[in-house]
Length: 228
Image 1 (cartoon, rainbow, N blue to C red):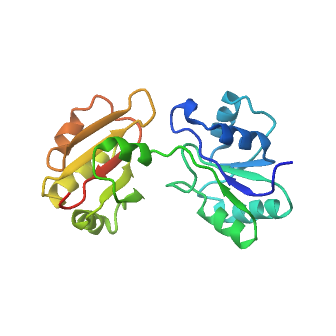
Image 2 (image 1 turned 90 degrees about the vertical axis):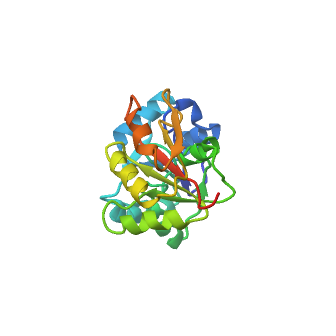
């Protein structure tokens, strides 16, 4: 019998080979798997030759109700793995309310290391990484200008996500606000076949992005700290 706990399990962000042995063993052994999309996770389990698992739908729109339900399952002695569609749960994905409720209920939390897009992007960026700030997805309306002004004044490398259809607008704003021509890296399709890094400056980024042949997938944006 697997130890009763909430297991936070990262899943591949593009390359199935990135799944860890420990993650596979955990998914094979737990009583339940809480997931954003049961169909998506079902496909992953099939690829890993894991069958017969009880899946619980857990996403942004039901997480308050489901957090209570899942915490009770664990309190009753069962084991639950939390996965997102790709990457590490809670990193720009649902999971915070469940972990908080599980802790409040006295449940054990076991977090597995594994895939997430921004860490390999930082390592391959060529920017200074003695310190960095990760923001997930940046504000789309309220506070957006202030956010970018704070990045302009930060001494640390700033890292965040953006979707392809919003990226041109973002790069235009970066050009206007972060006007000191510092280094910026646009990383896309991390771990996939068309993984690409555009290493440029805040003043040239929009032009260089428009020269990309593919705009699919999520992007990781990295901006050098002030005076790096």
